[in-house]
Length: 128
Image (tube, rainbow, N blue to C red; front, side, top):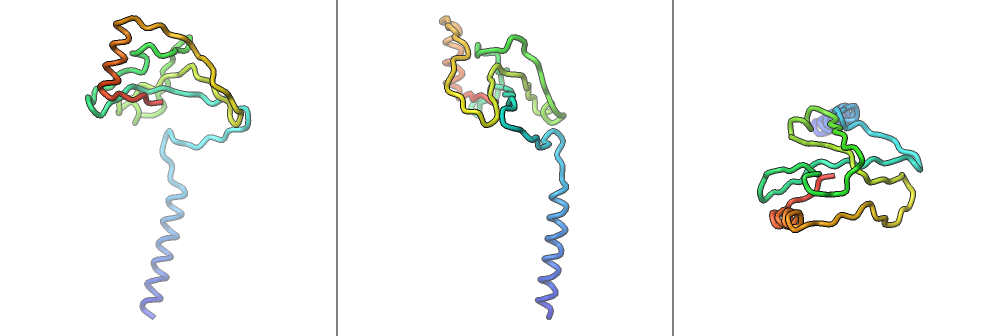
């Protein structure tokens, strides 16, 4: 009888935690529904490396840029982490197949090519 009562208590506690977890909300991470054809906005953050630990702005290198760069920090956590979330020129639509497209062409001079090489050598990754 004691084992059966403790089993019931465990099930009851699990049901309480499941209910609490279901109602949990983290600011800035609310789910968003998309319909077929809705535009999916791509945002860029920064260049980061576990080798150097010094972050750079995404647009510090000459990646393809939108006509106007707009900061779009969404919550306090992003500000405290030093995230610089900005818009990107990439365009996607929900559930619509898209083949590869050329977004822009950039010709690199020696100085810019060297900057790219240094970031690659320092194992920088793009955060989007």
